[in-house]
Image 1 (cartoon, rainbow, N blue to C red):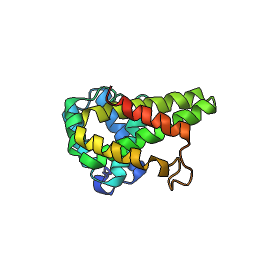
Image 2 (cartoon, rainbow, N blue to C red; image 1 turned 180 degrees about the vertical axis):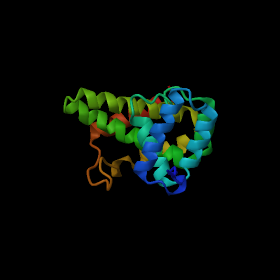
Image 3 (tube, helix red, strand yellow; image 1 turned 135 degrees about the horizontal axis):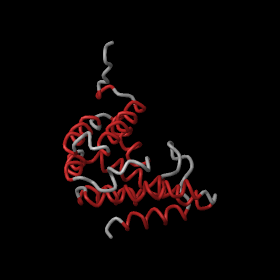
Image 4 (cartoon, rainbow, N blue to C red; image 1 turned 60 degrees about the vertical axis):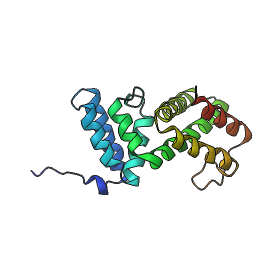
Length: 175
């Protein structure tokens, strides 16, 4: 039987999520070193699907602790990712922060806790990335916040409570 391998440059979004899940599991079981994991992630996030898939998994899976205590090799790799990494983390911070407010209103504690976990992970990553790049990206987001929203096409804008909470979360990065 021939072993199938996935070309990381051609991986779909779903494949990138599954690959990320496998690697994080292997890392947590100490079957994969931090350095090897960092190299693999660096290759995966060179594509849009890889970047989105890795962060969709690593930020949202409560059992993936990689982003909670960032190893130095992962910090270095994320820093090397530059603007695209900062941008996706900031966007995830905005979305998860806005969702915290939604889940509070709906009294959905489980989803609220999940969104809070994503938000905390985002802030933790942003604290260790290139300060100038993070600051520039965040300043642009704050400037554009009134035109942003909860939907992919921004047709549902953030309400005032969400915008205030997003700003609090952003300012919390410097704490």
